[in-house]
Length: 263
Image (cartoon, rainbow, N blue to C red):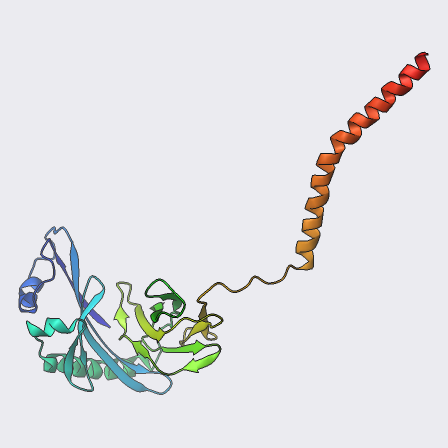
């Protein structure tokens, strides 16, 4: 993966027309960094199928601004309104991907097809809005810190695969050269339903599954250990209460016996 980052000092997002100018900034110049603008480009061959794939995108502070769809050969803006006042020539991105493809073929031959190390992902599931039963909402599955950018995300509802109302983002790059990805499931939370996001990646020995419930599931019944512990605590409290009473009763009996002996 090739990444180029440009620090900006109090400028906000630089316009695409200023890209060459910003790259010309002296690297040794001390600049107070407020924002990071990144051009992320990668091209890879997926093992074991050897399927080729690539991605070209621009980011600001780890948030995508736009990417180029290599199949449709056009730029796709994360916020569509951006396309109303600026544009990007997708042919430049496609040329870069073609160069990377050629470089990949050379590198593969030199490395004797040695694979890069796989980095297993982490994942979590959370709702977009506060959950109210019966109100439409969106579940988000956030998968992070994985490499390479080859990943399958599967949604399940009550242990059955869901195939509708799902959207996914492209692979977003991170500064540590790993990737992250979001998957969205539109749903209506109902009592008794539960959902799961299942992630498959080469870095995992088995699927990584994260479950989500509209309401917390009913706690499991108390085990024998819990019951024994509860009984022990009850006896301890009973001993604390009864101990002083037995002590004073024994003392009174001793005093009474002493008086009888004195008579």
